[in-house]
Every structure is written in C-alpha cells, then in structure tokens.
Amino acid sequence: MKSAVSPIDTDEAFPKHEIEQAFQHYWTLGGAGERWAEFSKLYTPDAILIDRVIEGVKNGRDEIRAYLERVMLTEMPALYTVYDWHTIEGNTVTNGMINRFDNPDPNGAPLDFFGVTIQIYAGDGLWSYQEDYYSWNGMMRVRSEYDRLCQLHDPDHPKRRTRNHWPAGPAWAVGQKKHPLGI
Image (cartoon, rainbow, N blue to C red; front, side):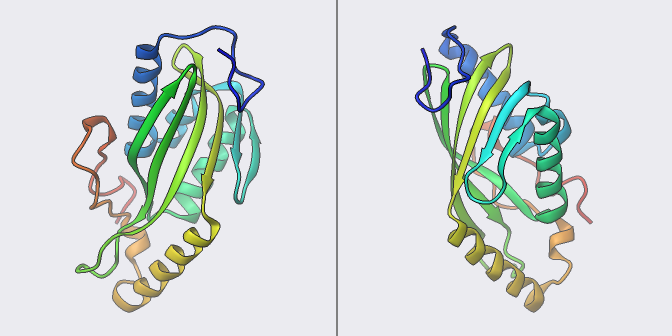
C-alpha cells in the first residue's frame, strides 16, 4: 500500500505484526531508552526525517543521528518523550507522544507539550521516512516555564536528567528514572 504522505514508501505491504514489533523496538531504543546512536540505525541509509517546526529536513541515517544527539543530549538534555498512542495503517505508523520536562519544583506537575509523528516502515526493522509535528508555541511556553522553575528551585536540574513521570505501561514504553548521563 502506498503511503499518502511519502513517495518513498515501498510497494511491499508488510504484515501488521512485523510493523508493530518494529515500532515497539523503535520506541524502546528511542523514546524510552534514549540510546540515540543505536536508535539512528533503525533508519534506512537514505531515510528522510522532517521536523516541521524548527529543523526542516534531515537526509540519511548520519544526519538523523547527528540531529538527535545534538538536540536530545546537548540542547535539551532534560527533555524526554512519553508514549501516548499509536496506530498502524498499511506501512504507516502514526503516534502521539508527550514531550516532557520533569518539574524542578519537587511538588510541581511535569511540564508537557504534545507531538505527533508519522513514519513509514521499510521492512527488516527499518524506517525510511519520519515527519514530526508539535506546537512551537507549546514548546516555547513549556521551555520558558522550565527555565524559570530551574532558576527558582534547582539551577542544576537540566544536568540531572530526571525522568520521574513515565506511564504505567506498556512495558516497552517505560524508561529509566534518570538518564545514564544525569548527575
């Protein structure tokens, strides 16, 4: 089945259970595991990743890895991604996520903005295409509030890389309480 969003979808229709298994592995390494170098190997060498809000187009596995490592390890180390839902139609997976910062105020609620990703499965556990959507205003509002609360409660909070608010399940979508690089 051809995808409505990408000309790079294959003519081969993959079994839904294979796509489901590949998606769970994708989420376990990326969203829950935050192992970005390993995660980037889940893209085909010629994959396309489009960040519709800020970054634009990333071409190929190497650009995707560099982008993910820069954003997730350097620019926003306190940010983590919480699984919300997903659906599979043909070779296309659409998923919703919560982009989350733990609140530096120990009594405060997490700071969230939502996102949606559309991706194309290419077979053999690999993805050939991904589009990310999220609200620029939502991201800036949350980031500004996070920075303000860090100054009030814990200026070192970004370095701690806490991840205290994972969902109860599914098990493949739940990460560690603290990123391995956290202090």
